Image 1 (tube, rainbow, N blue to C red):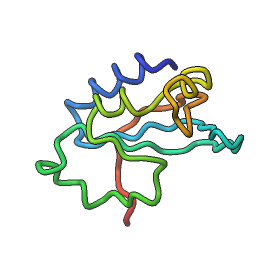
Image 2: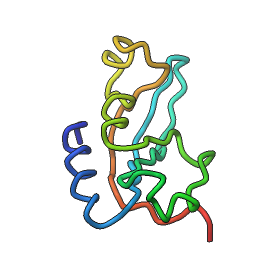
Image 3: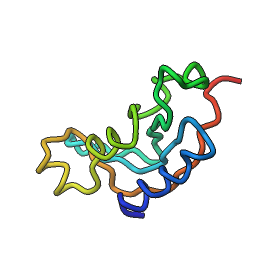
Image 4: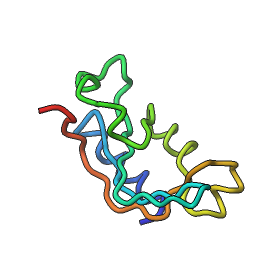
Length: 104
């Protein structure tokens, strides 16, 4: 799945949920690879989000305030990651789904 497809899926989810979860593989500049990591994307502004208390930030790779933030902060591929001076990049987007909860 490419980044544009992920963004389109996030836009579609806006109608059914306040928070989305993007599952992906990530590689760091150090060479460490992380499989099936979670990136949280708020689809509703945090101040209006009723489910924001269900997110435990430490359980996710990063949190994005909105789709625009996701688009600017998360990069796909090593070439783009290095070009944008990122310390990590996504090697593969796997799934986009509504976020349920980190608690209970």
